[in-house]
Image (spheres, rainbow, N blue to C red):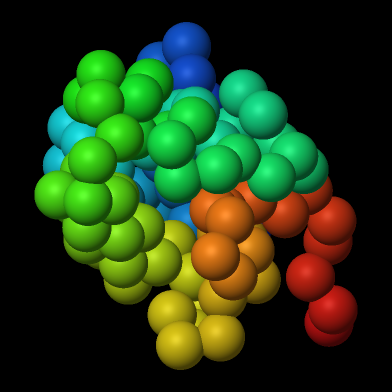
Length: 101
């Protein structure tokens, strides 16, 4: 991760420039899955199945809510994410590249 955003899976800590953030349990679960698969596109069904054990429409909506919450907490500009990227109609990907300065 970049120096602006750090996830410590061992300590279950998430830090951004300016300090620690406190994701909800579901947000942390989503983030930990994305971190373990950093750089890879994870589909909506892959994520929802791993988090809730199903992949129905309600689960996809819950996933979107969790992603939105995470972006509010970790992204410098949640409207223009640089860490948690949307792959339209597919899923999400955690960027492993340094954002532009």
